[in-house]
Image (cartoon, rainbow, N blue to C red; front, side, top):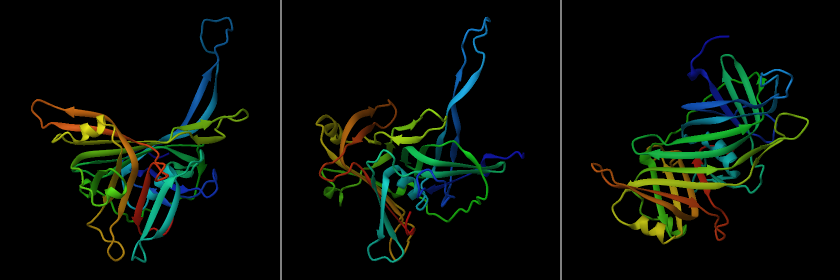
Length: 325
């Protein structure tokens, strides 16, 4: 087998149309850090057999695959990850456009949400993983840098495959200059709300995955999403007590994070855009950072809650030239 550098490893993903049935990749991910391999639980035989040695054998009793893929957010392939994270997708033409679509991702309340097929391809061979579920999805923007995601996944054990050929497509990327964050008393108030001058922002969706094992096999029979939690963290200058008051008055806020690459035009007059909207958030932490020689900043953390009025906790809209996922 040949030696090779990490840059030759490729990861592809596809939305499974039949849960647990492998599909060849529809998108290949541009990754910066990645590790996705089989994992196993081994139990050791500790039965006494007349010697001082503690173990006399071992068995693998649970086997799955798990890991994470992290990289820059791009406007096409991120849709596959959003589909699996949220579980529900609807596509429609963007207003006044003929080749630009709005993809709305909303939460599925099913414990078995949209599954993925994951392909790892390297010079030593191809490994296919089916029934992949996203355990957590982070999106983070820092001033002076790209917008990045970190996606953790769990799937059935890998099997040897063949025939996959990586084909990367041209995609648009996003940097922090294209990110705006807004708070308001309601979702309607987010329209026209003043952007918060943040230094960084991070959103995290945690799906609390549980591989479920049954007797008769050592691979999981299913992978369940048990609960969904959405949290965020923002860092900005401490110029007033607005967020201190929001925190300690327990004031509900609608939060929106919009990422729009205004240097790129798709269709007639539209920009690649990804927008997250959370209608009912509460600040749950407030920390001033007061280094003696630095500017005083504040870090505020918030948690999204389910809104009965809006009938969702978080929603994402991705605008691009993909017809459907």
